[in-house]
Picture (cartoon, one colour):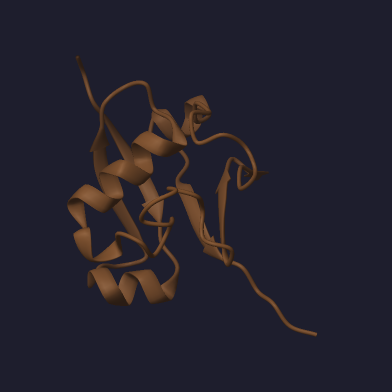
Length: 102
């Protein structure tokens, strides 16, 4: 089974923890779903386990959002397949820190 080089954009606080730049590229085996990408991130950068999603439930942390191809994927199932431009490496999968305030 082939794997795909998926581009992942990380917010500043996760870059600092992982000691990487804004964008990382990881090999992910099909099917290329949100879950598969997050699993690959946590496998490559174990210090990020529990920072993107809860250790036990695997639910997205409240102040992080997921985007791909200008689409908010924060509230869809993690089994959702990523758009073809992300799979082909033309577009990144974005993990964005949400902004809160009043």
